[in-house]
Length: 186
Image 1: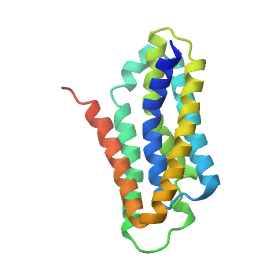
Image 2 (image 1 turned 90 degrees about the vertical axis):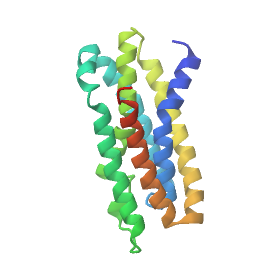
Image 3 (image 1 turned 30 degrees about the horizontal axis):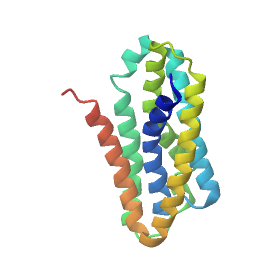
Image 4 (image 1 turned 120 degrees about the vertical axis):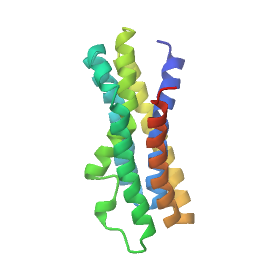
């Protein structure tokens, strides 16, 4: 597989992570360099690991999982998105448990944004392509794009406050809906 092809795949896979980091930073729920590191690191790590897992599992399980993987991603993104919208509509202050760069929320976002990478791993297994190099590139590109998204989101959040929290939640829900609609029969 050519380097250019891997970069195109990596950027495509990183777009969900970009939208999530942008929304999390703009909403003000994730603040500071530690939150940026946690989100970017975990998104990059999961984008690296999911193709490896998909590749290792192979084509037999791919057929079973592919029928409902998009529903898992949709459910996770919608759950987190609805919580962000709800928090944005309330005027009370946030507590630390609302930080999407920690705990279960972080894991749910990392899994939801990397489910597509699992399918890429399945595809690479069917093509008999070595997985380590493409996975490393995918993970590094996702990490870098997530850092950029976080920085840009922080700038937006200081200008627009609670509205960005609501927008971030809506973006997550829309990503989930895009995933569902892309799997509907034509």
